[in-house]
Length: 133
Image (cartoon, rainbow, N blue to C red):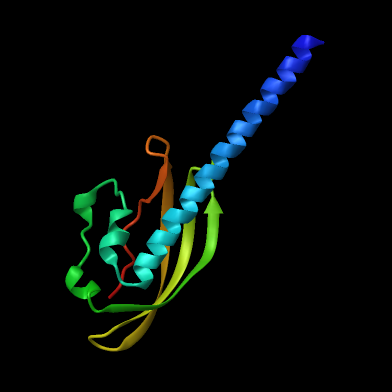
């Protein structure tokens, strides 16, 4: 009886630890996403870019000349897909913006992939900045 009780308590404590880890992972995800969204909304592309980690950074560098003319008017998450292990999130985000150089209002869908890094216990975005034009 003692072994059964100890086994049940051990199992419950392990489940509790997993729940705490998932909760912390969700909190850091919410913070990273909020920081990125806020940076995009306020046209702080340096901060948004600092949350990125691309497999080949040389393959993409933001066009800062174009980005300085971008003004975001709307940022809405349209779709969210969470991986089974809760370590990757795919978002489809609708961004409405205009370029103050030509005053043309545009809408894009930005397909983002967010990944959790267990070493630093934080999230990063693995896709380029939105394709503003």
